[in-house]
Length: 133
Image (tube, rainbow, N blue to C red; front, top):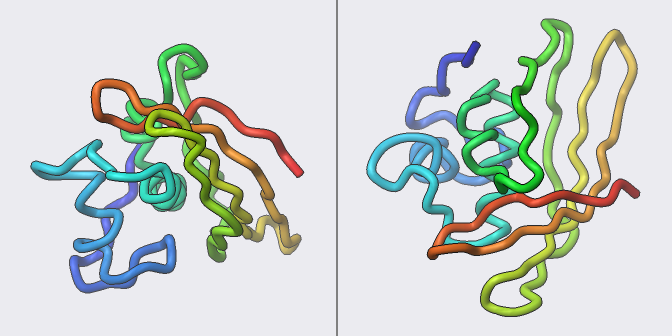
C-alpha cells in the first residue's frame, strides 16, 4: 500500500526542497526512475521508504539483488530524517553513498547507518546492496 504523496509544496522527506522538485520528480511523472546520480537515487529511495512507495523501491533495486516483495512500514514507525555522510563515484558506472536514516518505533529511536552500493546501467542508477555500520 502506498501512502499518499505529500502536497507538491510540502518539504521532501529526504530533507531537500519541496517534494515535487526533489524526490517527487523521480517517483512519478516523465522523469520517473531517472535520478541523475547515486546520491539522488539514495535520497529518492529514502523518501520512498517514508512514503511506502514499494513499487518504486523495487524498480530502483538492481535485479540481481532485488527481493521478491517488500512490506509496508508498520503503523507505529515514524521516519525522522536522513543524513548523507558521503557520496563517491568509483567510476562512471559505480558509486557508494554513506547515509544515516533515523526512525522511531514503539517509543525507541533507531539509526540505520549504511554504505550503499549503486550501479549505472543503460543510463539509469540502481541500488545494489549495502554494508551496515
